[in-house]
Image (tube, rainbow, N blue to C red; front, side):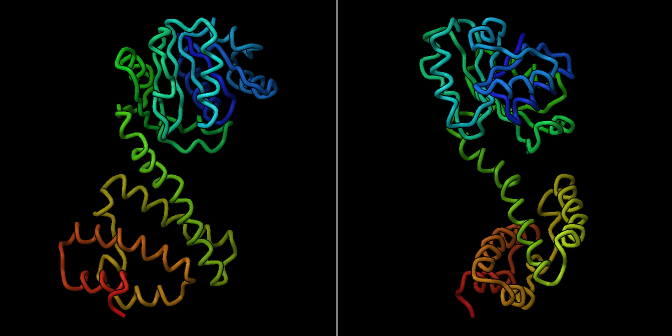
Length: 284
């Protein structure tokens, strides 16, 4: 199975590099910007293709590692080429394989292959890519082959239906992107207390990392601590009294979720009900 890449961004760099390191035959890259495909090819020790035609000819599987808005346009360009028997994959989290419209009529099987992983740097993200979880959606014809491809590289894999892709991607975004916003909010609050940016980061990093490890090891409910878990309404009031209007709303939205988790852990009680009424604004 020879794999080619269209698009030379962070995901393309990372997937191709990881594949090469695990003995997978990667043909190379095509990008609209030749400098980008040259860089990706050099990084992965593969070929830089001048045309789509050449890459398609040399590849059994073609990964479209381009932005979501470009997937359909790239596919339309590919349809004029001899694609019969090829496997097409895009790496969008929210988009389904249905973007490859009428693919079966031209003998092509399409898939969405999404890594649950924060690919933040094109040159280094491959180093810890063994922690990624690969989610595959698409036609059953070659689904098992794709699962074998990734599981053979030591990666966990799962299959999802097209109707669930948007909700699935929302879940991944919450744990990845939105956590960044929460961490930044906490850093900012410490800086308002007189911490420098670096000291705020240092102060929070151990708590953040150990908490994340605990959640993965023991589950979110078991890891939960703090004033909401204790039903400590007085401390929650003190927190909210110090926050700006925007931060108050963010805190309250998160507090509702934490309160639900606390009830799951400890069962319902009057302290939780009182706290719930206060957070919702039904008790002053």
